[in-house]
Image 1 (tube, rainbow, N blue to C red):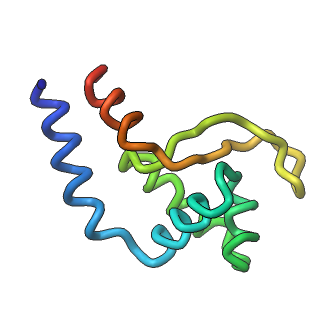
Image 2 (spheres, one colour):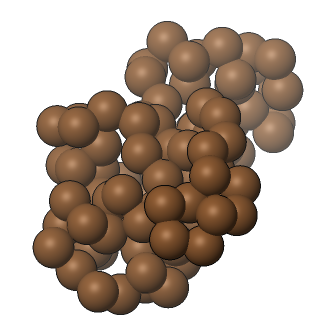
Length: 99
């Protein structure tokens, strides 16, 4: 294992206990409903804060907890947007082993 792999694992271990309430809700919604866009997550959470969901989803992605698994047209804007899913432990291990 390289220094980078160790650093990422350490960073993930530090990030998990510090997940905020909206981040936890996003993870719960994705566990229940499967892969979704930020607007779909916002709807599932019965929220009206799309920018908050986007920001927290990006943080979860950067922490290695979410993965972009595709693109889909947004139901309101028609723009192609990212579809997020939760990263499984096996996917996380594969990522760390490759980097």
